[in-house]
Amino acid sequence: MTYEELVPVIRRLAIEAGAKIMEIYNSDDFAVKVKSDDSPVTEADEAADALISAGLRAVFPDVLLVTEEQAASHEIKGDTFLIVDPLDGTKEFIHRRGDFTVNIALVEKGEPTRGVVYAPARQRMFFTQADGSSVEETGSFDPDTLGELKPIQVAQSDNEALMVVASKSHRDQATDDYIGKYKVKDSKSAGSSLKFCLVATGEADIYPRVGRTMEWDTAAGHAVLTGAGGKVVRFDDHSALLYGKEGYANPFFIACAPGVDLKEA
Image 1 (cartoon, rainbow, N blue to C red):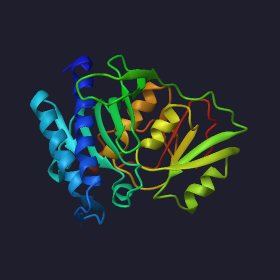
Image 2 (cartoon, rainbow, N blue to C red):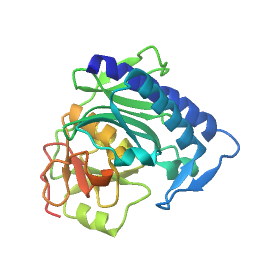
Image 3 (cartoon, rainbow, N blue to C red):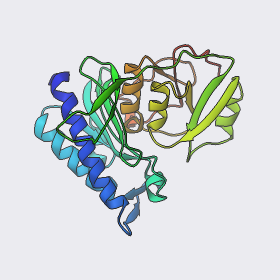
Image 4 (spheres, rainbow, N blue to C red):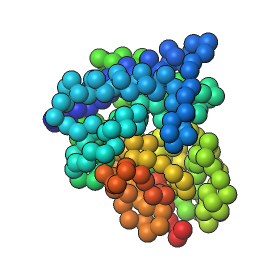
């Protein structure tokens, strides 16, 4: 598998999954179940997972695949793997708030090196190209034809006037306390992995996450942010956030432009 082979496939599958998700999103009603960890799952999560998994396995049968909706995959380990969250922001989906995304990423030796984040209800798509640089695509989102691509780059941050983005569904006092350590010009809320992409495009400088996430929640957004010149570090010691951890659970983390003067936890 080369990056030149991978990128068109994950882009296409994200668009196809997004179309399936929107079909269900725009229906009169859809089923919602509760998983063993008390998180919700919808028929859109399951349909998108089936579509993406089948597509990846057909093209890259020898590459380890880890997906949120297939619990058996969570016990498998490897240095190189594809990791999928077919519908990040299920609560946003259920409440029809639009901030949900399709996420597919490649992890190599602990780092997410390529990824795609597609927000079908917001009509925004971000992905890393074969050379590792990140772009935002605009247009009709045809699975087989690229639209207009715009290179994206993190902001040249002003530490006297930072723009902060935080979780729409999971913001709490601990997050607000940490944000209070910075000189903030303004803040915004966003759902799902869109927060990484807002930092990647320079629409925000920093996204702190003081709460539970899994690697499939963050890998694609992390890859996009890295390709735009940003970074994702652990909240506790500011070392790089790595992947392939036991159970695929993340510690708290901070995603930011490199010019942000990070404060201690």
